[in-house]
Image (tube, rainbow, N blue to C red; front, top):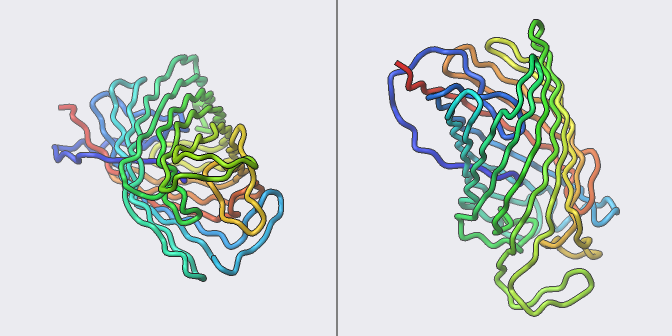
Amino acid sequence: MKTSLKVLIIISFLMPLVVQAQMPHDAIYMGKNQVCVAGMYSSSSWNQYWENTLKRENFNVGTQTTQSFMLMPVIGISKRVNVILSLPYVWTSNSAGNLMGQHGIQDLSAWLKVKAIKAGGFSLNAIVGGSIPLGNYVPNFMPMSIGYQCRTFTGRLLANYKEPRTGLYVTAHGSYGWRGNSKIDQDTYQANDKVYNTNQVQMPNVYDAAVRVGILRKGWQTEVWAERTACLNGDNIRRNDMPFLTNNMQATSVGWYGKVQPHNIGLNARVGYVVDGLNVGQSTSYTVGLLYQISFRK
């Protein structure tokens, strides 16, 4: 479940510049005194999941779908320092059974991205970020919950090389994420073959790594990507049981991303598919977004 945003959109006189809306996992930066606001709709669905290593269906769930709408402002402090904010509204549903979906505001996230080293077409970028829950959602009603209801902090190192003439680029990153406790609406829970008499659940920390290959030219971008996300520890979903916050969730995903943005308004799209996993659904996801740039330069 991806994290995300909130922003105050300021109306100002605009300059029709070529815009490259950026994310915490790329090496694209907004210039100084520039703001790009992205409004994005996402949907992710699965009807098969891995219960530990067993891939199965659950006819009491059918097809599980998670949807979200997110606004994400990217603020250019300088051409080598950017701030990214996000806060999504998320809702879930099932095609079968009687589990009711949840809906509401999820977690406010903030990222600081710094281009630490620049040498020709190569750059090394340091990225730190964190999130805090804002919505009053129930985290342990999985798979219908919309988030984990815990604070997070992530450190990421990202390397990028872009060939100046063709725009061909290769990006690779690795991250480590710390997660705080999640407060649940029950006084006891079972995990790791033990019973805990508390409503504080210790969340497993996570890591992720990804590689992206694409072309970035004036006004458009296209790339293919592969990503691995996993917990560092945790237990497995028990046979015929619901998933829980302490589960060791792992997923390997592949996908495509594209963007068209010739001036201050643009469109982007993303498609992803989980090819292998542990204690997660084999989901297909897509995202479409509208990008809008504001420049405060006279």
